[in-house]
Image 1 (cartoon, rainbow, N blue to C red):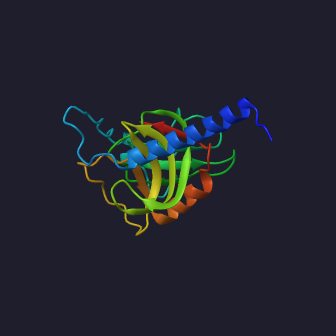
Image 2: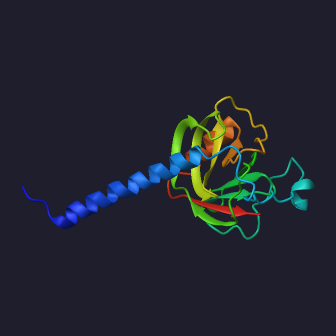
Image 3: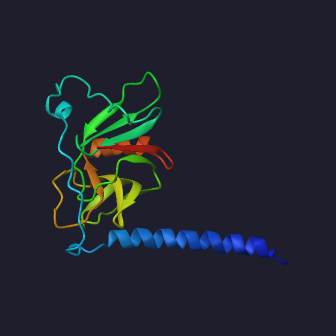
Length: 185
């Protein structure tokens, strides 16, 4: 049975795209621990005044300018995530431990997920939800398998925004492929 040349080209194109995506992910997972001295990393923004004075008994409001509709909102400065569902639902919010490489403010979509892998810092992690790439480092939310959320080694280029296991479970259930993620300062 003869195949059409357009079918073969489409098949080869799909295989090539998948291979490039896999190689890009593998490259980001094996980035050097010490970036060249010429590379400059953006410092993490200082916490906002609202984060400093927030009453722990009251829900933390979703940041203004973070868009509308169902989305994940990540504030680098507040070290906090909101899972914003349908209108009328109270957003789930929790603190996170930012990585050493930060995504730029803007709107993204979840591009890939992994149930359990080893993080770029060598630690077993679960419920990985990737949404960006910065400086060749994959950026995403995850929980350490041991549940800890220590500060990352400042000498390593990592993109894992870490959270507790319970919050990681909530993120995994909420942020499926093509879900919207909004990053604010």
